[in-house]
Length: 247
Image (cartoon, rainbow, N blue to C red; front, side):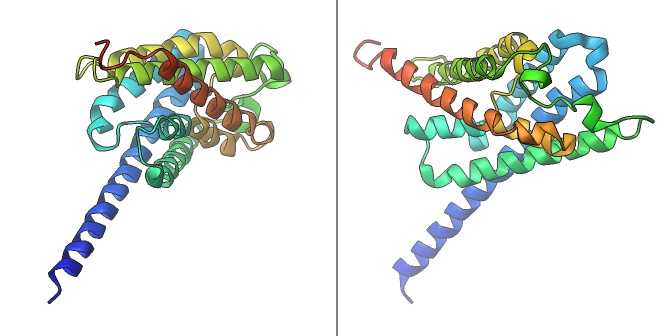
């Protein structure tokens, strides 16, 4: 019996198990984010306003950081995962599991939200917008493509900058979820009037598929701009981060 071969097979199985856990955790976390954040907008937006919706997104992320963080790191956002690969904080081999799980979770969140919302007579996902992201005539207050691009790029950079800062070895262990969640609240307070705030391609995909019209046509913007912003945020933080000698 080849002991080395058996050991190698065990390592492969353990590696696959880790990847599967990452995918499932990211799917669950993104599901919660979409149902919690977009759900608050679709089901209660007229009652709680965009402040309430912003808080719902931030709380969803904060809770998930402490729930699935030990399993996957709680990215629940393709722009975050890509940014952390660029930062060399996660292995690029894991990226398909992160992004695959996030997209599946986002779509499942959109599906469950659609099923709930459809229980009310007269509900129309296409007419309501279904918490989708848009620009020009589909911006909540009429902002054009350039404003949408700047908003999504800058706000996603804010998010990645915060994540990078709270994962630095000098940051107190166990407190990272609080500033990250609060940053997402701030991001939504700024971005909702402009684009309905994406900063997360999986969140945008999850609801756009059920809006079914203009949201799909404009979806490219809320995939491309957040990814660009995330990479910028990583480079910006790495430019100023303290070295271990400075700590």
